[in-house]
Length: 399
Ligand SMILES: *Cc1c(COP(=O)(O)O)cnc(C)c1O
Image (cartoon, rainbow, N blue to C red; front, top):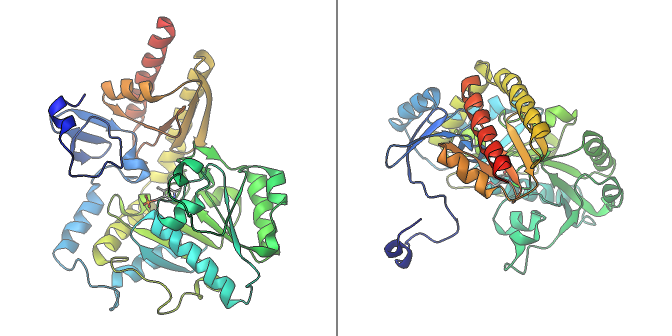
């Protein structure tokens, strides 16, 4: 609990977050340390951002070298690291070109602008809406907040950016009801992160994509949380046998250095020409270096195989727990994007885990969200599983 003096003093930082009572000062691998030397197993990974753990050696080394060379030049000049990261990203995906920015919301802004520009360039001006889905999360800027189909995110910010049409996620009838002819694009997460770790049904997604292709509607997949290996493949769309027109990336791309990206197929990406879009910081040498080193590490080692193997162990343990513990209603997710749906508020469980030096997240009031670093170990998983089991069985005994 904060003491009375600090409660009465106005913080110089705006109060946009309700923070846990920990002051963090250091991180390495799966761990973070606070200002009094406590060590925490970080199963939030900075909200799916530090996918290689904190300060991974390979990225750290590359950044040190880049810090001595050049930090920023603006996009007035050629930046070799931008070309390199773009070639690497298009090399591991079905896309042809990349645009770089600084965050997830900016990547989605870029995607929405590109979709509108494509529609304009192809004389499809009767198209006037973008479809997004309930419980989604696409960011906090004006337009991405409007794209986010959650009223609690919209509250107090009228008038919203117009043009978004909201559809029920995973609902067959809802996608049959879309007026594709007037639709510019659909935007969705394949596993909704903030919205409760809800996975899109494969046939539903495939039907949606097929309908879109038929009517020249662009498919934008928001991979800001699911991308960069989080689900056990480099990108979540690979699990769905689809090829989106555009995907957006951020969180895991720079290992914690702010970097966002939009990848698109050539027929769409060509609608961006000099003057149509831009960013001062986007794609700067330091951020690109973090992206290159992160992607190199992800593709060189056995990290994705580690996610597949260890997440299956973790899922098995959680399913076992679900059988014996009534409060657990469902275990869901893919790879290391995992949600445990409880029958009650999970905030007390998050606190009890923190008391055992383990950091976890929520995704909605009743979902415990677990986001281990992709290179976590079986030993660390066991530490987490044992702690959670002890907390929940203590509670069962008490009730
Ligand atoms: C985090 C997130 C965003 C927003 O990213 P910012 O970097 O916070 O702007 C958008 N979409 C999804 C799916 C996210 O998880």
